[in-house]
Length: 209
Image (cartoon, rainbow, N blue to C red):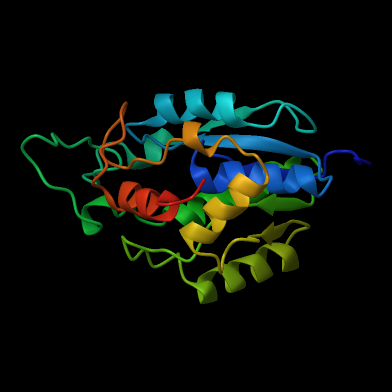
């Protein structure tokens, strides 16, 4: 397999979707640099630890962690302020984090352009439990156009129209270690099995081998 020099940044979280994306890019012969964002999420340490375990061992640059946690310090979102799952229930609305996707994509694009990379890959899929205003197809199209018009970075989201099930099937096909990925939004160490991400994950993997 022929591999060119690194030209892309991948937003990597250690979750099922971004891990499958990394293996898909490797199958395409695309060299990339993975970037992990610590935005103050309570599960950041677990996510990053899993990410170091599940990334492919070849054709990517060193893993970089960007800390932007000050932005959401004190935020009441249950992505930042961990809930006591023995006493509290967590809904999709409780997990809302203002402009998170805008922040991640714009920061990823700035990081990429400042290092001479021309593309940012993100594994956003067709799911939006928290109903973020920056998670629609229209938003992604407009942001991608703006970043390419006013810079040199293109946003790539090859799974945008996929379901979680389709991503899981692709991950298995590519031999990605999806069983080791971590996607829980409500618990910091062991997946709760009840938050929107956990339910999506369990449903997607049900019956797959």
